[in-house]
Length: 316
Image (cartoon, rainbow, N blue to C red):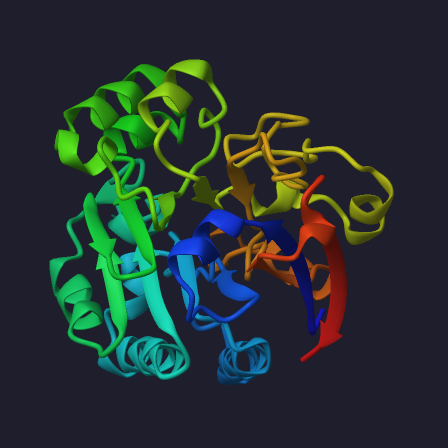
């Protein structure tokens, strides 16, 4: 399906504009996740994403993980350069801030191996960081005059990849607690504060929310919109999806998040719902759009009671 599904969230944040008099209103932060770059992500699709970004003209682009499908997909120099050129063009439109997802640190098992093979993608990460206006965070922080971003990488131990991706909340808590204290506390009050964390599975748990209490928003992907068929997606107003990456039915925190000002979690659907690794199911992409979100921060009191949320479709 050659469609974008854009979820626009208009959010009342007078405190931000009090301290940033020159900021545009709305101040735009675009969120895209789970590109799962591989040969099946065509140049036409990459160009369509760039064109959509140009149209929306965001101030920042946040990408919370699974940029690539597996490290095998960028072994060829031509493919790696194709990906880097895409990121370079994004960086020409706005500041791009990426975090690391589970697919960004694995290879497919070869003959005689079982389970995903973990590898530190140091060469690829260095090449991404060398791009102008592109910032890759691997348990690191980005900060400028407007925003503060933590990019926390949930480790292979969290995903327990040896057991077929079984997410582990005690590991999540332990890893967050092991981050430098300055990453999580005494954060700048005058800036928008984002925690980019690929999987949202446990982010609404009280213990996790407490550790991340100083952040304004938790930005995630991973759930692929719960693989909810588009027609049902429009009809069923729930945060539950159909199935999760861990093959759990009716998973929470899959879609339709950030519905009130009490909510902090924004989960965006995937740019590529069915990735190359799960052939032949990847052919089902013909029936699913590419998802993206736009957070529009405003000083207009019209949106003071609750966020304005609108879903629109556009051909690419």
